[in-house]
Length: 561
Image (cartoon, rainbow, N blue to C red):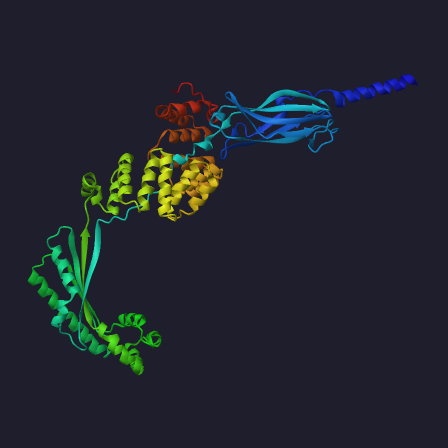
């Protein structure tokens, strides 16, 4: 009897030792699957999952395990949030892995992206507690490398928004003068030819005869009769006023020997109801609303006149204040003022920048392709016209293009103080936020930049940084740039990415690198090697990246130098 009791106790001790007291065996890499593998950088993070298939009779019943994902790159390492598991005999709240059956568990990983992570190894580290004892199991390798193609979208490559000049080489001016007539009269009275307006019109036409920067496009005569007296008689009167005004104009041209007068045109209006309504609406006539309603009720001119005459008190006031102003001929000289030529503007800047108007000096910068020259011009513009936000905005643009982002930001801020709602300024400040990875502020700034030509490129780049590749593709639209091609590549539309990248106006090392990635993903060996050779010629550092980039893991790049 005692022997059987001892035997039972011994068996129980063996069970306890095998199920609870024995140490946990080290984990095998075959237990783990990483997705994706290699990991991929998304929105400045490196996310992923590791699935563990823990076999039966492996996880001892009294064990608590802390699993820490560790990404090792160079002489550095980064850790993701730890994950916790426990055996079925542990009193805790972590996921339980049964001893008899084992279990499948998922371990999330997430790291802040660093460029060196492109060449890295993902490990899981295990810290075990069993009762009062703690120990560490060997790390297990579960993944290799980080694909960081998404990080090739650069805010630095986005063109800042230009606050455009309003320069017009030819500005059309209209010079007008009225000749007034007495009721039912068509002859021009002498006093009507002495008005200041007519003298000014004749002066401008005269100046245009000798000034190369003035060009008379034409002179028009519009003659009118007031809408009282009937259509038939008013037609005769308006036509007569037109003829007498034409005669005056022809005599003036002949007398002053004008040779450049452009097209001479004339027309008349028998009853000027439009002018009548406009004058009445602006008057202080007591019944003006009633008069205007009559005009809207009756379209026939004879009926209109009769109904308005029926308003006897009002008509008397109209006859005194309104109708005399509608008996006139208007001469309009259309004169083009021709501005400085491009060469004259350039020469003026070199000799005396202050001689240029704000529009001319801003336009002057657009005549140069060299960013340094543009910068020089905008520097001068900020000193001559310090109250115009465009000078600071555009100077900031040239600083941004030159890579001097602190100076760019300082100038954009000056522009914002002068014009806080200017869409170009908001977009450019959004670019600075994008550079500084302040994506919320960038989004807000871009939201206040509607209508800016450069906005699609900026907004698309923001979406790349946020990891929303579909939105990025939509934002870019038809833009042909490295970032636009990258968005299509990340969205796995390789044909579109190829077309976009091949259409980039000034391709650089990044263009060729992205084309090589498209080639790798579409198994086009020739495209990979041809473009990486172009990368090698343009940027040796980028070629070194390619040699450890998992995008090209199946290609032998040793011969490319």
